[in-house]
Length: 74
Image 1 (cartoon, rainbow, N blue to C red):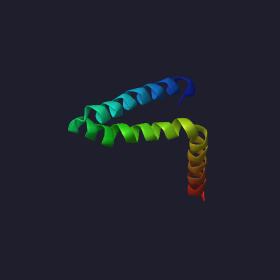
Image 2: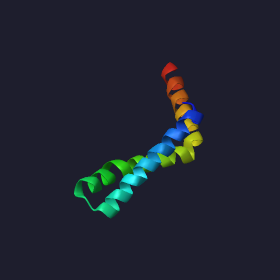
Image 3: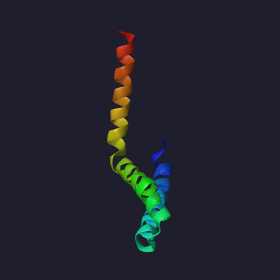
């Protein structure tokens, strides 16, 4: 994945998600509140962690894939 193209997309996701959460809190609509609870908040949390720790997660996934590949050859 190309980081330069990925970060603006994640920022846009954060803006849309935060708007949805704000609408749920101040609009007090049951449908929007459910959508914010079960879709927007988890998406914001996961994309936030991804932006914060992208390098570490990528290194961990690559080392894990290399370990599994090396283990299968024995």
